Amino acid sequence: MKIAVLSRDERHLIELARQLRNRPGLDEVDMIAGSPARLATMSDEAVPDVLIVDQPRADEGELDQLESIGQLFPRMGFIVLTGDLSQDFLLRAMRAGVREVLPAAPGIAALGQALDRAAEKMGSHGAAQGKVLAFISCKGGSGSTFLATNLAYALSSGGSKRVALIDMNLQFGDASLFVSDNKPLATLSDVATQIHRLDPSFLASSMVSVTPNFSVLAAPSDPAHASDVKPEHVDAILKLARRQYDFVVLDVGRSLDPVSIRALDHADTIYPVLQMTLPYIRDGKRLLTVFRNLDYGRDKVELVINRYDKNGDIKLKDLEEAFDTAIQVTMPNNYDAAAKSVNQGVPVTRLAPEAPLSAALMEMARQLTGEAAPVEAEGLMARMFKRRVGPADRRKAAR
Image (cartoon, rainbow, N blue to C red; front, side, top):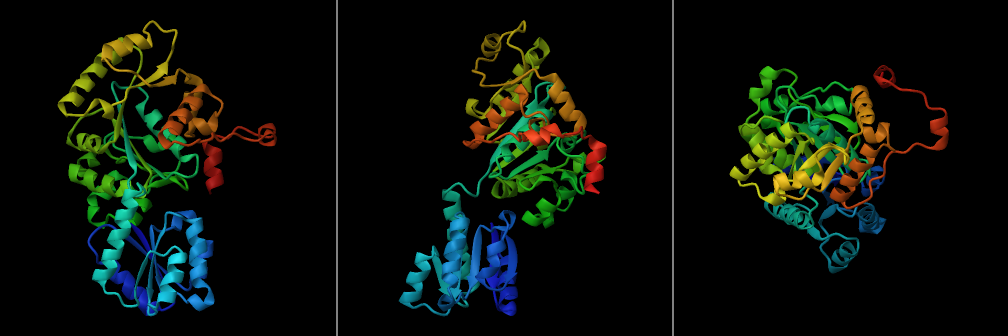
């Protein structure tokens, strides 16, 4: 969980944070010095899962301030530490949305139990467990990296979902280049070799931030470092990522090895990507056979047809008969829009929001999130005065 401690007493603030950081697990603990009024300017990215408030002053309206903050951030839980355990204070705290009130010096055991109850409540509401979606190519050149990166961006574009993309193509992964021209400061292999440091802050700082709610953990820059990543590293990283993000999208590449299989084990849905030609169909059937041998159920695997052409020689019905499964996801053959997106390193839904491919990606994102995820359409005046922006322009603007 992400935990924040708020206190006027600096010594008590430091001591509470120290005790919490010594708890087993991967909790992120932040310190906020001052009164609840400090929280009024808190950004969405800084909102904790649980806020521990040290001795709020009810007579100064601070419980009312907590109630207002709770209305702004309904997923955040409150734990109040106080020396006033009177019935009047407890009633006012309950009305403010506080469900845990502990003595001013509760002891780490009592505080830990309150945090465990908060974590259990979050888990029951589904707030602490994101979905893992894995894209894997049936054959080289299928477009799985393009779809993984652009779907991840589409999932985040509604603004309410936090999305992480992890490039699991350990030898030749370049997923970050599809959505950003920022050079990764760290990669998956760097995180693996420092796995003892793994916590939410370390994971976030190792990623390329594409937008405030979409980040990419790049593949190793040198293929020689692929061996640094072990299956147990994948376990730790994905368990943490599930708790920090609403969606974790994996670009698995094409190879099947202990590391990629461990990643697929964690996936809620696996999307094998193929095109409508016989070589793809042949390799796709081989891949599905491997998945059956790994005991992946039919509900875990969902075929994606890329560059779909309803007028092609092979029909969708032929593919469904060949694979003995219904195919729900097709991406249209929109080569020009896809090529421009890849060449400029800009998501296609941003670069060409009206393209059929963008519409298909946004529809897939909508079905996964259960909410409308609008494309980034530009206003009339912006389009009238728009000039062509290339990678060099974006780098200049970044400087």
